[in-house]
Length: 257
Image (tube, rainbow, N blue to C red; front, side, top):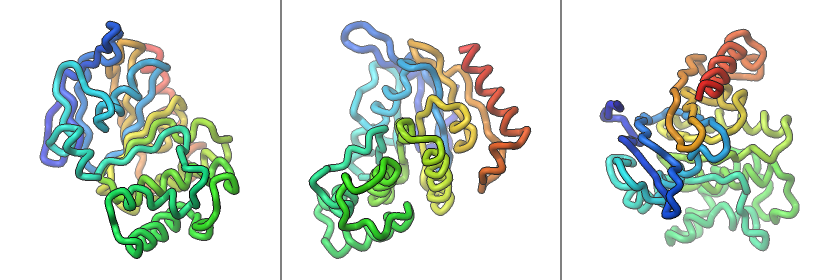
């Protein structure tokens, strides 16, 4: 049973999701996520990871149980503009400049142009793309497009950032580079909580404070593995015995699930 505390950002109690066709996507999930955590979700395809994320953002409704975000319903939390989502596909508008893409969330909220530009400059510098403001998506590499997508999510200064396999389509060198950048961004503002879906156990162990291991459908939480290695974590961490041990622990839980 979960234990909700004052700094619990996401609370799931006996959470279930059954689709109209009878498919049980998520079953009896109990999980609390505290402010400043970096949770990675791993599990086989179709185990409900993305469904949980969609319920957190209010894109899907749960069938049974309780789901609180910041102590309120997912829809109410979304209206506060404190939850941001990064998908596997960068979902950039191809006809718009980098600046226009990044500013979109603020533009939709009616924020002044001056503030939009200031915030765009801030987040693009965070992701190392401060010189790309007037470029179009077609002029960017795959890794750069994903950086722009992350910058767009960060421009609203979210308390909760959800990322659904954002690096899955990238080559390994670009992927590891973005992993380091993401950790750097998160460490600069440890009040931001990150939830990250991946099929890559190595990525999960490298990034997270805790790894949530899901079972095959119906999706349940098989275990939550704590990753106690302190931050910052550089490339050297990937070659340590502790890294290998933790990858083995998570892998064993996946097999048992």
